[in-house]
Image (tube, rainbow, N blue to C red; front, side, top):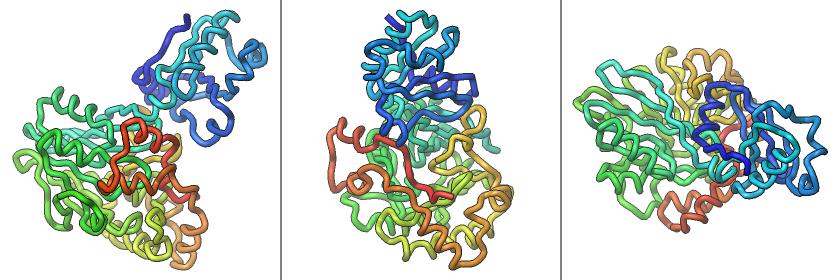
Length: 376
């Protein structure tokens, strides 16, 4: 029997840029839509049904002495193909436990910084989905920002750190993944915050995020300051932490900018997006470190797993911030929208509390890449 590899072990390889060879045995259409990327990854796609009679057809594509990680949708087909590779003389073969379904749910905590008054800031990287969430802790208290639905990860992390989650915040009403915000707040007896302009249809109580109202984490040591920054949604709100870190939500990414169309208002919201990017953000300190809620391209993932950039550098290098003419900007945004995220309308309704799909259905709804960015 071939060995198995956990998503945690694979994540460590990718964020540390270890040489990683992956054989993805899903069908080509699924592979082309969504695959494992990042770090120093070499990936080959060969549908498993082409290999059932033998793996000779890919023998010249793989090094028999190299570690090979076989990946499928749920982990069953990859085990079968890994066994066939071993029988064919491959000596270091693993099957990824749980396949792409498990990979989609893995969260990898990456330390961003020690904060100036003794706290810490962490980024949780969802490598299989490109989602980023944040954990701020200070003096026994914590805030979680843009949490994924796998809330047990944040609860365990808080226990390890010996802190209590007091605040849970979403920068906006998400459309590409199911937020764990409300459930996490319920489980920890914390307060759940949403921008009120994004919450006009929600079915639950929440605390409104309003510009100028700081949220204190710990003994006044960490200030999370909401900054109203519409464009991706009408209520999108950014946070400045410790006067040094700008959490941009889905407004600004390292190599792209947010899309304004997921609620059906692209033509209306593109002006808000431009105002935020070309005026509100531009007035902020260029020394702020921008920390987005997603990444789209593998090269945005730095060594060690961190996704970040100095705001001033983004204004020099991010092509979405280089279009001075407003009409050209509108054209660039509205003509470069990628396909809608899978089940995005059902995801929005779930995040509003209008529907409550079963756990397995929620997993299925989130399958696939995030598509929150304008394509360059």
